[in-house]
Image 1: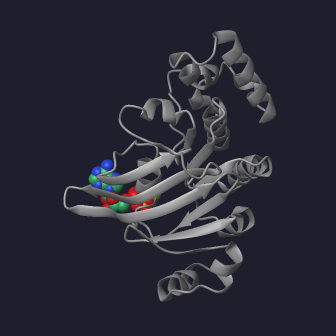
Image 2: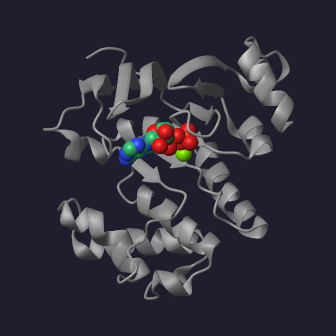
Length: 244
Ligand SMILES: Nc1ncnc2c1ncn2[C@@H]1O[C@H](COP(=O)(O)OP(=O)(O)O)[C@@H](O)[C@H]1O
Ligand SMILES: [Mg+2]
């Protein structure tokens, strides 16, 4: 058990798809309460990085520790309870109601009794202003509503870390703000967060640290102030020139 206040340690993480070397030795630490925004050009490996953390993609090599425990094929199911994930395209199950989507994991993993799971789901639904949608199917929800349900689904098991992969990229402007407010609120409550986003003003506001990935490597990291106002590498200077 090392570094008890460190939620996550990633050591020399590499991932290849065939000959395509996507992650080329990522070293990274995430401490409790940190909010890390991951930036980088398209195709640089940001999604693959997040997906490797919860083993949706099995790393080619390297180590990932959660609370000092090495993640392996044997314990990943248990470890995943502490790694909530939210995707760009919501990934709600379309032939299940909102309530069934929310209670699926806790019931399947036998971590809650049905009435307990439904009670928690209902509290979270009330919290996001959608208690009336418990028995609705995902198709009847707007994009923003679907994504807020996906976020509370990730919260059902009280994970230690929430991973967001471009949670607002598929949304219209109005829904984007609803989803960002919910993430902001989780941040204010001290949630540990990693997020890939293209919303730069949100990134500046929410991040305790910005990490920039290029060609499967972290090439620069720092506070939002350091990163946006005093970028060190030419690559980041060029990136910022284009987007700001
Ligand atoms: N499941 C996969 N199979 C094969 N190639 C993949 C897979 N997932 C990602 N890649 C490749 O990995 C590279 C990085 O992709 P990705 O992690 O999605 O980048 P980003 O999220 O930064 O845009 C791309 O070249 C992509 O084609
Ligand atoms: Mg991506």
